[in-house]
Length: 549
Image (cartoon, rainbow, N blue to C red):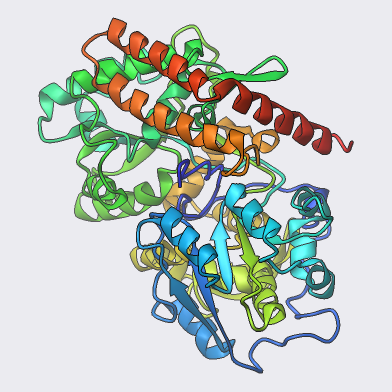
């Protein structure tokens, strides 16, 4: 995925997500004021889970995604044994684009695809390969109620049908983008002020001098660079950098000429050339980055969703050393900017990605019934926290949710095993119900002493949700890949990737700016202006749709 965590806007738990994400919801999401419905299957005659066997194939359309073996963790094992559902994974093999094209050309589709709301989704729909879901949405209770009519309408295709079930849909801020600090190193260096880009540079220099075996600034696979970009402009989130456009009045303009981007790249080059940023940032795997975090071999970590690794790392580091641990800090900002307007990440009403049922499926209604169950209270509680009786037992009403899980004592006494389970089930959250999970978790966490609160939840409530920008208007802007604009986008993506790598390795500030100037010229040559015009029109259409026009 080019923008792995646009995700991320993604909130809560998707790969790109953390363990206890919480956000809110309005009436539009249909779960706010009246609470959730009973977990009771279809509204009329329909497929009843647990009575008949259901087996289907599922493909996650990402280079990095590997689905955990279904039935091996406690959550999916319970579903397999009690709901009689077996999900067979089809892997991308680390090359999703090639796998996708092979499946399309060979007409050998999986039953379900999990993918971004982008041109690949449009290609499937236009090729008449997807099952329209309108009839099922009316027939089964949970998706219509919890996703809400407004969000479903935004997913409606030009032909009037809905083909996609969203993941991490919401009506209020969520998201995890930001900065994580290794507390032990921070305290040992005197807990210096760490608010501005100047502060960050000075601190990283200290770390390099005192801790030669530690990575001063860990940027993941590059997501941390996108987060750093946000420090140089008010309301300039990571998605502008990773999507290669910047709003300028009523138009979208070039990232290469954006003053914020240019200044940010000069700063990143300075950190990189002084070896303050991990030197394998653009080449390492997600697992290699995660290993540094979990082992505590870093001073500052930034990513579009750092909470997944950091949550686990905080628990393990504290188990080894009571003085160790991690914390999140308010987003870094350039001196002179309003720190309250620095937005390292985004959130979207549409959430992250979507699920589609292809016409290869023998029983699409049964698959929809399973996804509808997963969206509901019992499904969400089971997939997220494991089967009833483990970390939750029974339900009760909290604000906005009728059937929130009642957490057991084991939830707070068996944190390491709980987090290990959730680390697996994160990758099974295909239809994450942000509002249900958020409201359920918030109600419980607020009853605990601070030192017992879930690490990610604590910082989501105090920092990350307050610093994410609503990006709903910027969703679904990409053209079809085979169109003129689509081919231009592919070339611009390549030009951007090459320019960013060159700028990071440049020998001087002047060289950085020359690289970006050349990238602008190259991009214009391949149709960047026309691509930006296309995206601008789609952006304006989104704003009109959101305004009810």
